[in-house]
Image (cartoon, rainbow, N blue to C red; front, side):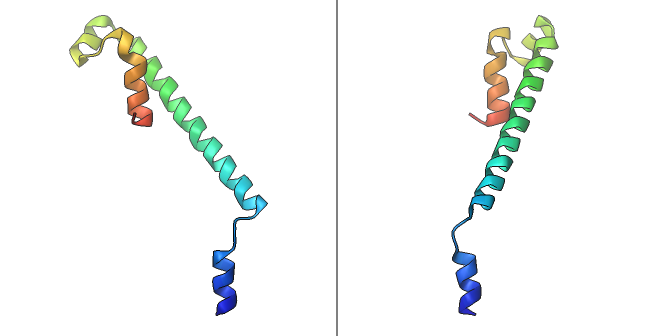
Length: 71
């Protein structure tokens, strides 16, 4: 049983770190695409529609960032 616990506690190898890096890049790419799509859709709205939503045209990027990234 000691052998199994040693395997679990082993540090991530180079391949594991590379796979994690690729996964992070993929997640960041998906988030960027969602941000761009949100900005595109909000920019497509008329000023009247944006006003109905309580959004000024100048705050579109901020709102898109908050919606996608949460900050």
